[in-house]
Length: 221
Image 1 (spheres, rainbow, N blue to C red):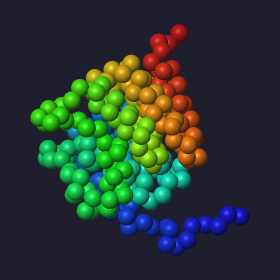
Image 2 (tube, helix red, strand yellow; image 1 turned 90 degrees about the vertical axis):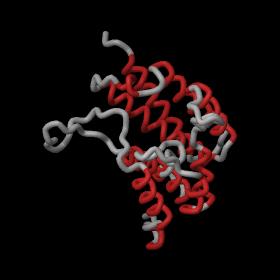
Image 3 (spheres, rainbow, N blue to C red; image 1 turned 120 degrees about the vertical axis):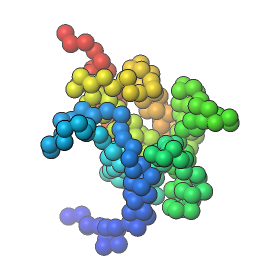
Image 4 (cartoon, rainbow, N blue to C red; image 1 turned 120 degrees about the horizontal axis):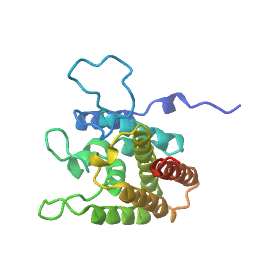
């Protein structure tokens, strides 16, 4: 019989802080697709939206179940914090993040963040942003590859669920169906230089999601 976790290992103040900070930063911001029917009565005139924190929790859960440590799990909760503005149009600065959760977590978050704006503050082209992101995954630490794989597993799973529910998900996304297929496959490829034994199951799951996605795109016979 395997030993259970130690009492100290049951709770991580670092992860708790990351959850709190991510919930605060992304408060009032939502995912781009809703494919499940609500489990409760929705007031007339209201719409059900999925808070971003649901995605962050899913990504962090994948990272944790794959066997990564607390700094990587904390960074998974915060992986969109630098990249995305909050509901007030503010951007979280790297120093603010580092001061809050430490250099190790902040470094991982930076590693998995797209550089969306150019030097003039204008939005960079989608493909250029993705190419730079992929290079960072190839050359960065395996922990960053793990967060990226977990992020893409959940994102692509969610896109496929929307397709299977006949939701027009691509109207809400920056990249069309082929661009999404290319990018998720490219993330899978970019992770292959890393030989950490915790990564192969994550790659296999992303490949499964790519297969599901491509099947959902094919017209019914």
